[in-house]
Image (cartoon, rainbow, N blue to C red; front, side):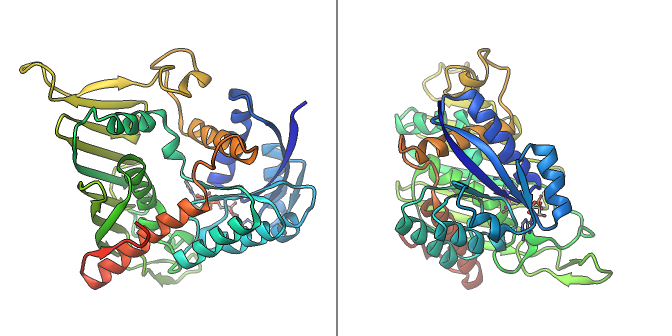
Length: 373
Ligand SMILES: NC(=O)c1ccc[n+]([C@@H]2O[C@H](COP(=O)([O-])OP(=O)(O)OC[C@H]3O[C@@H](n4cnc5c(N)ncnc54)[C@H](O)[C@@H]3O)[C@@H](O)[C@H]2O)c1
């Protein structure tokens, strides 16, 4: 009999559902130390929470996340609520001795993220931040190839995360526009930064350019609200390994749905990746014969762990929710002490620090060193 781990989930929107799919699949796909019980789901109103309970299979529902967090029968609190609520929810859960899984960005400000990371470390609980794109076996392959020197000396990096869900100027003001920590750089540029450091190691200096393009949006009450956060956040980067590069977070990229892409250039070869076709990694080798050179497509399959856990056949492809299942599996193993936390609050703080340094650099118009790099 596996030990039971009782989960309390806050939020039943896009990510709330993705987390439930992740927990459900992870337990069936991987051999995990726990059986996870979907104990309770919290949302703003009882009607929302109850509808989600019935649809997603939770035992209980509540409109009071604080009460849920204090429930001694729960082991893990999973936060998929809007960004500005992450800090209070996580600190309350940590104070109650629960393990905490929190969606990105960890907190609106790096000072808040630091408080969360330090509180978690003091309490000795296990944490995880939702950076699911890093769970793609093709990103692990890219990292392995870079580390093994297959690309030679790394000279350059280009990364971006571009979508168009905020391209419509008539789209309503949302929590993603919140002056406290919102904006495209925090919302999706955070993924581009996480991938850049996952592949190439620490970023030491940045030069940012963050701009608001759509200056006001309907507030949903018949008026408009001024937008202060960025629609596009770009940065030039210098890495500790000597390479230079750039990233972009852009939520008004008309036509782009999930362009979480990167290219890495080295003396012996290059890699090219696009999240819109995330079961493929393209590799160029300068060692190929002249007249035969070109990017070759490596397709994901059982040779790229843990793909084979999901499907025995290569080329049949993993999906977005499968990446969450891989993230969940790593976190559950970390809770059991079998491995380190894959991307804990300290790692989430690192991303907040990068975001804030880029924003500061944009305001000052100067290159800035990144703390702790
Ligand atoms: N890792 C990823 O790929 C990814 C993708 C999308 C969103 N996110 C992150 O997930 C979080 C949620 O985003 P989303 O797209 O799911 O938003 P959403 O609006 O779809 O869902 C948010 C949910 O939280 C609920 N909520 C709001 N206030 C609450 C409160 N006080 N108590 C309980 N529930 C409350 C809402 O009613 C809703 O059900 C954000 O932090 C976002 O950055 C991560």
